[in-house]
Image (cartoon, rainbow, N blue to C red; front, side, top):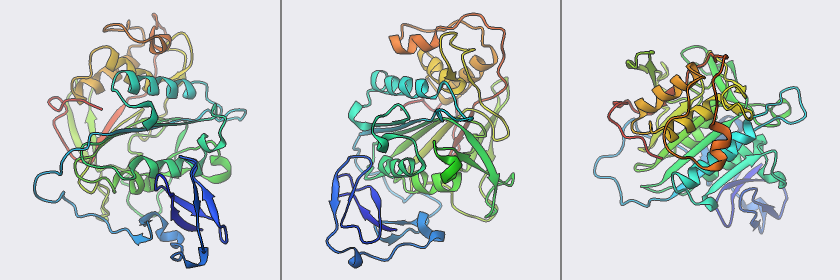
Length: 360
């Protein structure tokens, strides 16, 4: 396959050999190619993750460039993927609900423009907006394409996660973490190495990315260098997950913070035990509840509140009024079921979780 940039949104597109044009899966613009034979040769499979715009991608230096950050831009952009694996043995009930609630939260609480939120679910009529492996890969490029200092990006995923044997020696536990698109049984999973190379490493200074990953085995699914290991008293240390090989897993100066549903060795619940109304992902529920309950002051208070919600599923919703859609999912009652998963926090740099303000 040859890579060309979309003429409208500049997302890299895979052009079939000999094709005179291609339609973008994200903005639907048609890009005409006068002579495909005149394009640069395709990247080899082993290096395909490091080629963008026809240029070889070199890993960034281990530290941000010196000097003050460039002037702020201030745009907001979000990618939301809710994968239900409909009509299969892998089917999940709450993932589309999670996607709808996350979109509503971003628009109404954090003022993300609706036009800047891309949602991939199996409810979408347009096949290009469904969470297949190809569409998710293209959406990753869209999320970070052209980002500038001051931009705030969000990636939310609700669906299956898994693990597979690490082949390149960059995992301390010997396993890569993965996300499962809707067609993963036919097309394969998306591995953490690819996620890191696509949406973490390219981020320039002044850009912030938050990931909210509601899936099994998701603790380090962005392959970020540091994991906040917190006990039930709220005390924590930062674990160093940088590969022994010295491979760079950080950014090009930007900031990435990820909330995930559980540790790499744990599974995450898709359940109605929390809302008592409809199925939701336990992690997405606890994330929204922490915000609506007034705990979104620091990253430490967020993480503690999320863990408390999952451990104590009988607590009443705290805080002020919430919107009708979120109320539908969050107004739970007393429960007898306890979930066995602990949300995790990872980042590209260590920081004090109790003094750093939380913001999207």
